[in-house]
Length: 65
Image 1 (cartoon, rainbow, N blue to C red):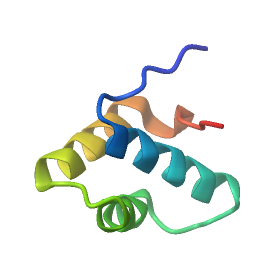
Image 2 (cartoon, rainbow, N blue to C red):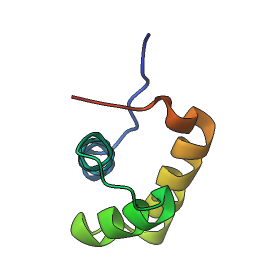
Image 3 (tube, helix red, strand yellow):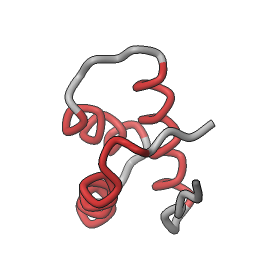
Image 4 (spheres, rainbow, N blue to C red):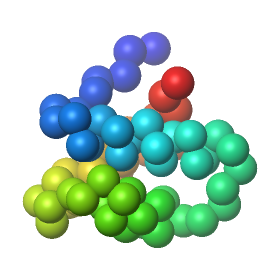
């Protein structure tokens, strides 16, 4: 399966971080993880919204290594 990576280094790092959190068993809702990633990677509101849309479109299929 091919996964399309979002543009922008900060967003890519946020996606990888969220993926690692979910793989490690973090049970927090995806919205909470996105908010934490936005703070951790200093995402703009536009980038955070992109991340939300990215996960809505991809569902739970996203797991990166």
